[in-house]
Amino acid sequence: MSAPSSTARTYRITALAGDGIGPEIMRVGRAVLDAVAQQMGFALQWQEGLIGGAAYEQTGDPLPAETLKMAQESDAVYLAAVGDFKYDTLPPEKRPERALLGLRAGLGLFANLRPVKVFPQLVGASSLKPEVVLGIDLVVVRELTGGIYFGQPKGIFTDAQGSRRGVNTMVYSEAEVDRIARVAFELARKRRRKLCSVDKANVLEVSQLWRERVNVIAADYPDVELSHLYIDNAAMQLVRWPKQFDVILTGNLFGDILSDEAAMLTGSIGMLPSASLGSSGPGLYEPVHGSAPDIAGQDKANPIAQVLSGALMLRYSLDQPQAADRIEQAVEAVLAQGYRTPDIYSEGMTLVGCQEMGEKLVAALSQQQAQ
Ligand code: NAD
Image (cartoon, rainbow, N blue to C red; front, top):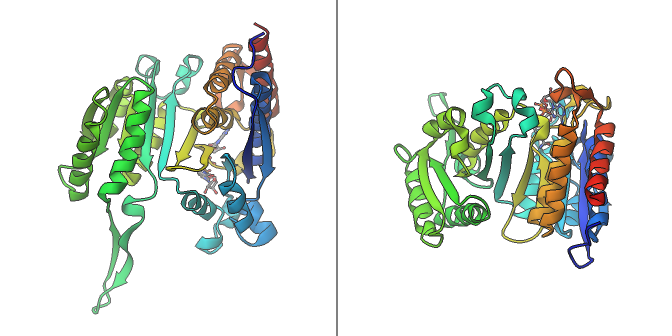
């Protein structure tokens, strides 16, 4: 038995289960986190908040003020997923997905981290050749609160002749670039010390400033090897030879696209966690995927992205890296034992539901403890 590594302490975690498969995968995520906390000698004090369609149904608001307050006052926020196609006709401010924007803004989360790691047991799930994907271990750091999604002016404008123009503005200030660049450099330092910044500096002035500032910040991180790629080349390199990347730093729009492309390298959206961080205060941890209404309530969801999001929470917000390692090792162990939810199932494996996958993960943690 290994002894608890850290001084006993209690962390206050806001759990937001949301919609669709959210409650199912949240149950598993919490069970795994509670199990590892007990093993490592710390405690998680859970507080449940309403969000998304579930919150809209009960309060008329997808992000009630009390949910945001609860999140702001916690050590970390653990979110499953929101949304359902039945809410598509609601006005934009009432839609479940709007809650995510409100949460990010309310917590000041400007950095989105998406680690993409290919588990050797699942190389066959990728649409790329095994030799291309085996060993992929990269993180996309995406700026989350600036760029073209927020720049002004924006809108659809009608001129005097009645002709309409759609307008969005891509804008980054020096300060916005500097703070996201620092997040990426710090992360690279904890990994393989390679950082690739992605922009479109051959065409866009906003990218020229981006590149200039990343080079300035790089002076504080001489131990990190910095390179730059244009977004078009980066999109190509990511499918040509993804193993060349360690940390990829990019803006909001390019990051939106690249992080989905990177996610699909693994071929299994149910496996990918994410973290969103601010300068201070609680981080937000959630799977990359949505609420999967097509399989909700059928015990078919893969809870691993939720579980791995819990590992990120332990590493980045709670400073419990050993507990995070344990969870990641438990996922590998369960995959090695051949257990698969339907989305990652292949012949010869053992098909399990969401709940049973959770039980196998908790069992794998106990086995580690016993070793
Ligand atoms: P989705 O990610 O929910 O589902 C896409 C496909 O992947 C579906 O076939 C689904 O069954 C499958 N899938 C997703 N997660 C899975 C898991 N854990 N296990 C097994 N299969 C899984 O995307 P969508 O269908 O485009 O969107 C559904 C709803 O989710 C929409 O309302 C959308 O707005 C919302 N959404 C929410 C978030 C979020 O909460 N962060 C992100 C994306 C989409």
